[in-house]
Length: 79
Image (cartoon, rainbow, N blue to C red; front, side, top):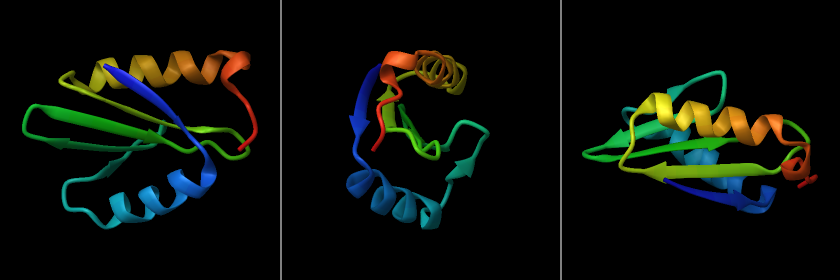
């Protein structure tokens, strides 16, 4: 699992592209897409830094990682 912080200028266009991609689902934590063994979750909370979480993991693992990031105030830098 890899977690990459993204500034808004990167996460917003990526979110737009993922929104139109076949197979993308919107969850309470962000946008999720699975292609073969690779899964990704793009978080984009309002007023906070977005995160790209990716790896050969299942949806539950991505959700746990996103929840941990969201709960950590040190990772809540403004975009």
